[in-house]
Image 1 (cartoon, rainbow, N blue to C red):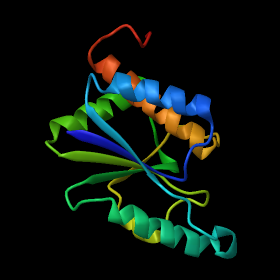
Image 2 (image 1 turned 180 degrees about the horizontal axis):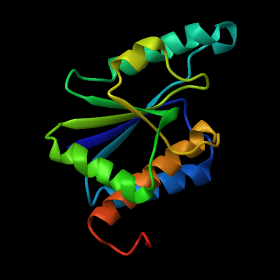
Image 3 (image 1 turned 45 degrees about the horizontal axis):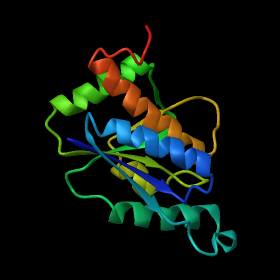
Length: 157
């Protein structure tokens, strides 16, 4: 299985980019992982929230294949402990799927078309974080999940 994270908009903060790169390298010891960035929609200021979500949704759908399992990072999704999330990952690996795709939406969330296509939703917190920071938090949690599955000392119970 491979894991892909799709996110809208680039990350400008060099420290965040360095940390994300560090965790992506660490993840490479456990699973094939990729991060795909969809550029911000041009002239988004002139679009309604719904139109912006629709355009972002169309770009997200272009990045997916028919066999992908799509999980949205959504504030109304299921919340896990780190150990629970590791079990969630294991369940998907055991299911025989080829690619598990997580998506961080734009500033207004996801279009109806994306919600309809999704196989699930998870939430990292009830708090709101910047879209740039969520990328780092999610990649770190993926890494933590795999260290938990391997009983490695990174996560303390």
